[in-house]
Length: 171
Length: 182
Image (cartoon, rainbow over all chains, first blue to last red; front, side, top):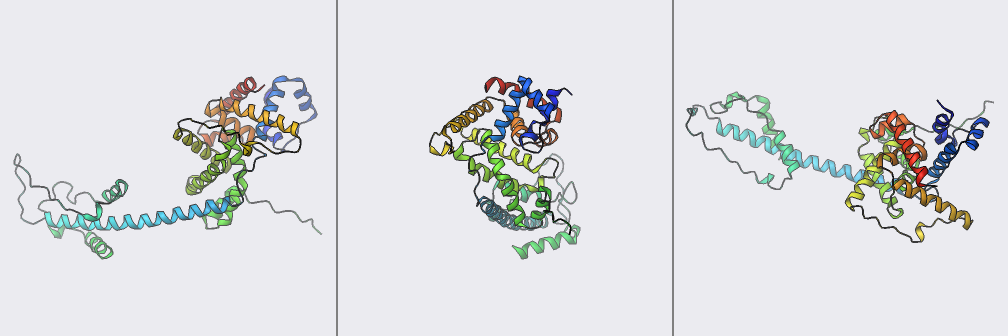
């Protein structure tokens, strides 16, 4: 490492008062225009804004008050979305129960399929895209993985039924 | 009798851990410790004096909101400065680069010796103008290194680059500033 590189590496620490120049360092600074110019820049950078009153005594109180408020708003939003998710889970179960009637024949190939069941959920009308995304993510894949028509209520897991019942109770 | 020594102040990492455990006094200490330096950094990065308090406050707010993303690889100081720099960049974009130079009394530093005062102001003004002319990464690396005293490893981690690249950016910035700030 050259003397210039060595001094350059130490300049911030010397400017901050953590280190000091040796006699040889000072001699080099006096004789090297490049190092002297860099040292001037580092000292000027160190002094930038030093005389201004930046940040107030109440800054910490203000910042922490904002953080607390933001966390409180976040918890409230989680409760609201959680309620929507529970409702959506119950609705999904209700849809499954309605369409999975035993004995319903599977449409033959080429024939038009059954009319899709539409279930309006007024509670979701006011939900934002983000909230709807959370709700959709809670929907389980079809139980059979292929056709859900023809699967009876008996095929549902006890946990699915319990979850739906809990959601109805909470909503 | 053994000499009484001052206890070492808690590290930033220790303060963050205490805050995560619910100790808000630790957060207040972090703010007191870093707000002035953050303000000077943003001042060097080109923030308007009238915006500094708001920028510092918003940077600290964002830092505390995403404290779980700070794992201590970069220093708290450099991580905070990076948040501030990104905020400043977003502010500039929002204002579409329209900077209003304020020359009111609030921008004039009050010191005892008017002559020294004028010289200091002139040096600061030239350096600020030179920094504004640098590419963003060179400016940030220079300020983190020369003003904040961060090591190259630390700068690299906070800016997502390598220590070698950080060193190159710094020396390019120094070379350019030597031309711009006589």
